[in-house]
Length: 415
Image (cartoon, rainbow, N blue to C red):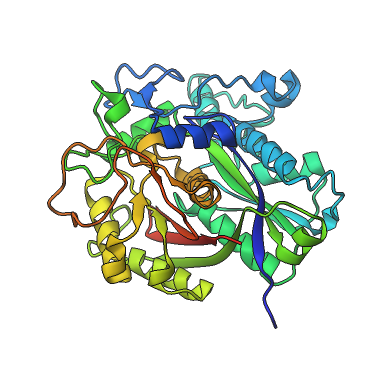
C-alpha cells in the first residue's frame, strides 16, 4: 500500500507572545519574552511568582457568556486557535466532506483550573458535594476536540493524545498516520494547556522544575545558558491543519509545508529526568529522519525541546551532535521556549508552527537570554543566540519530550 503525503494548509495560535499566528511569529523573530509576574492567582507565597501567561484574553470576546461558563480556559484557548487555523485553511469555504475531517488534540493536563476550583470548593463546603454540573466535561482533556467537532460538524476521527509535554507532537504524528492510511482527508490537529494555576505552579515548584528568578522574569527562561535554573511555565494553544496532498491540490489550497516525518521513542530511564546521554532524544530524531527517508545532512534547522533545565539541555544537545555528526555545526538550532516559556501539552504544536515559519519566511527565530556559555554543552553548536538569522530552510525538525520519558519529533520540508 502506497502511503499518502500529508501537508500543512493552515495554522492558528494563541500564546504568551501573541494572540494569533501572525503576532506569535512576529514576536518570535523580534526575540520578545512573554514572562511576567503572575496575574491569574495570588502567588505571594510561592517560590516562583512569574509565568508566561496569555495576555489580554477575555473569553467574552470569543464566546457568549453561557458558552464561556461551560469551558475551561484550556478549552477556550484550543477553540480560538482551531477557529483561526480552520479559517486560514478555507476548508469550510471549500465545502470539504466533513465526514472525512477529524480532530486530534493534545493536552498534558486538561482542565486543571476547573479541577482545582471544584475540589477546593468542595473542601471548603464542610463535605457537602455541591459540584458544578459542568465540572467533569469542563475538566476532561478530550473535551477540546469534542467541542471543535461540535462547532464545525466534523465527523472524522476525534480524540486526545496525552503524553505530558509531547502530547501535541504526538497528536501531529497520529494525525499524519491516519491521513497516510486514507482514514481522513483533513485533520484539525493541535494542543492546548492552561496550567498557570496555584496547583500547577505549586506542583512544578515542588519538583524543583521551575526557575525562581523572581527578580528578572523576562530573562528567566535561558536555554543552554550556564546559569539556567529551570523552565518558565507557559499557557496557550496552537492548531495546524493537516491535509492529504492530492486533496489539497484539488481544492486549490495554499500548501505551507509537508509533514514528511514523525518519530517516537521512550527514554525508559526516569519519571522526570532525561536519559543522561540523550539516548531517547537520539533515537526519536533518528526514527524521524528514517520515516522521512532523509539523512542527517538534509536537515537545515532543529527547533529543540530546550526547556532551560540543567539536565535536559545537555542531553538534547549531546543527542543532536551524535546524530548529525559534523553537520550539526553547520545548522541553526534554537529554543523558542526562551520566549514563550514551556506550554506543556501545547508545546509541540506551537514549536511546530515556529519550525514551519522558518520554511515559509527563511528566518530562524533566536534563542534569547544567553549570557554565559555552559562548558558542558558543545560550544561548536549554533543555538542562534539572541538575534534571528535569515537563512533558507528546506527541512526543519522539532523536538518535544515529556515527563515519563515520552519523546516525539516531527519533520517538515518545503514543497
